[in-house]
Length: 209
Image (cartoon, rainbow, N blue to C red; front, side):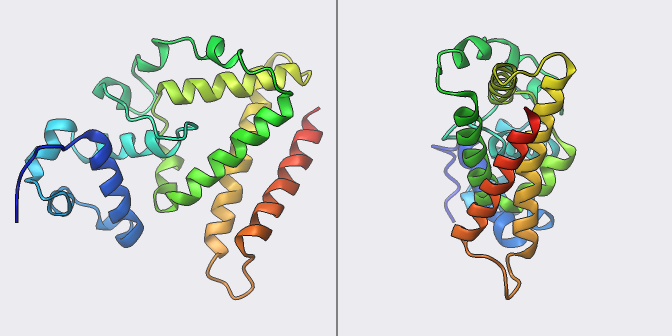
């Protein structure tokens, strides 16, 4: 087996880890198995994730939870401490998000669909999201998007964060429910699953305002 480290990157490591998780579950992911899949020595992975498996898990969570078309791969180990780090504060995501002038509910719906699709794509890592919340530019951008949209919808004060929590929790909960029942005989196909997601999302957004 070749052990050429050329081309090894944090994103490549994360994607291969997600592939292993999809096939073997979280318990099936080890640095040795990951190294074998990448055709590198396991120590080469520690060059990118010096704090080991816990740091890798946090990076996977940040990647999966990214609202961007391509996942944000944290580049500073300090931002992987499960809620710490400074990377998410180096930009102004609220200013960037303010350029989108579409109606608030259109923006929230588009984000919710993209987030649902990403969680379904990497559903094997869903359990990581329960215990980990790395702060990255993507999570800051998501917070800015939700807060600005809900403020435009008429919420204020603590209700803005409460509404954001409700929307975010709905998306995660809907995907968990779908994945949990997807192997049942009467499980809906993707078209029906998306229709059910849209129905609940519309009801939630109406209820918030």
